[in-house]
Length: 154
Image 1 (cartoon, rainbow, N blue to C red):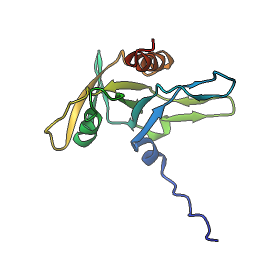
Image 2: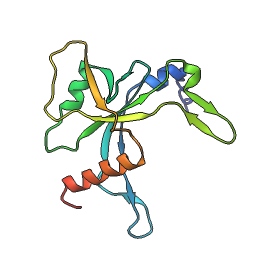
Image 3: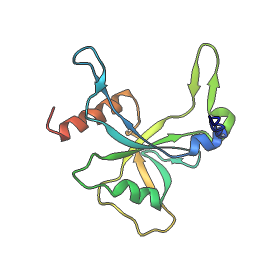
Image 4: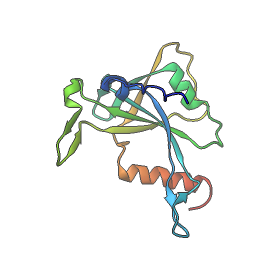
């Protein structure tokens, strides 16, 4: 029997800046057993130190390929959101860990590229994320509720 492959380890910078395509799938427990609700939201997670803040927006250069991937969905499809984790520039300020807490510096914002959007830019697109799109428990609940509403459930 062959040995399992050696795990691949990433540096903290590579891990935090690698784009992840994931899905929030809330669970329900109709008969005491947790099952997916059927109303997920899809997202691409990015972490960056190259964002800029204005009075009302977070400005971020997103690769044209990723912008077009996010906007390529059919208008009837489940939307996909970009969640941008805005990290401080010094890597040593990203996390503070002790036995009593885990502190991650700065925060995340969410952004939706409308379905059918595309750019002809070959390198990147600067997106402006409203600072009101802070990704927190309230906004996650609102996005999950919107998924149910699109399906005519709420």
